[in-house]
Image (cartoon, rainbow, N blue to C red; front, side, top):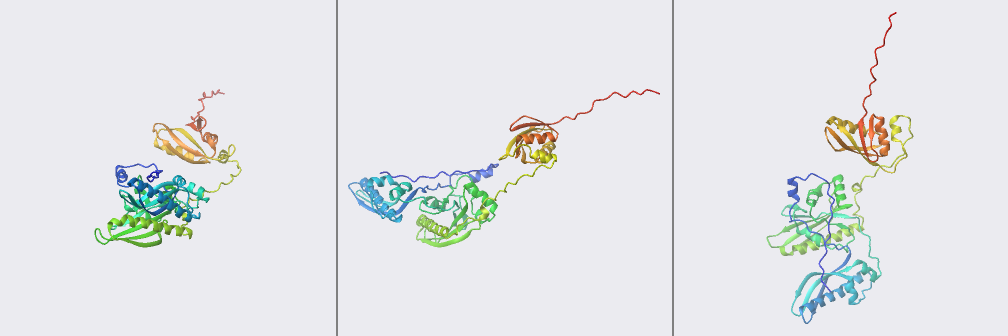
Length: 416
């Protein structure tokens, strides 16, 4: 039997390429923020198990208390999951238990009194009880915990006890699929109290896509202190969506400031119950405006009518997707860059054309995305007066030299 520490989830972030100025770096640096959330999605938890064990030594009493806690927790979990509450052997319990959470303990020379939490592996527990443990959960919900204290609202600008409470919360027994940012990296810039009051769906859609979420939950607490060190009142609100709608609220109170962590832990549990109830009643449905806009359906290209542009657009067999082609072109001046880009964009089938490497007075590179492929693009460029060299995904284009007729000798005239 061993005491396992709570594992922590590693949060991965997809950060867009932006120019980071010294002022921006100063806003996101520092070690005073960020708490990694506890990863408990793969475990069942039974909390608040009380034990009182006496033995010949402190260590023996402690191990005996943990083993007793496993038995009592298994009975509770088995009844909760419909397994009847029957006991299993201690050896089986050692295989099912993934961790012991010490909520409070008192250790004496021969006695151990504690309140413990027991974590059971979800897959193994389901196989022993013969039940399906992959219960349906909500769509991924991004959590932005806002705390108001002293008239100031904070999220991840500094490490707050409210974010710590959400990081400690074990989500294995919840039907809501919470995405809890760690508060590091760009989190303080993207997720703040001001953002929770902006209803614009376009920016919200960008943020949710960064964190792999479909919707946003904004659990809010406002702490009011009666006097320094005295009673603290917490006003909790369960908010949801870009419009910051309130779906539930309640008040909790503790006698001293030392009880604030317990106050916030209880508040998180109550808010989770509100969110689960809202999920069951259909009130946590994601806003349709947060979904990506539907892509236009592909339409059949009309048959060629004889003009050059249409024929060039329909050269060869139709392709399943677009192709990316790199074009090398001469850029003696800035005007040549804009003119060449405009000419390439005007070719039917070209989705985009942008210069990726500029060398004035030399050879620049242009990235072209086209539906017709490199062969159709080559034919279209030649039809517009370019000499095209290369094959595959890289083409070199030059303007075809102007051919002037040779000078003819003057026609001799015979005098009559």
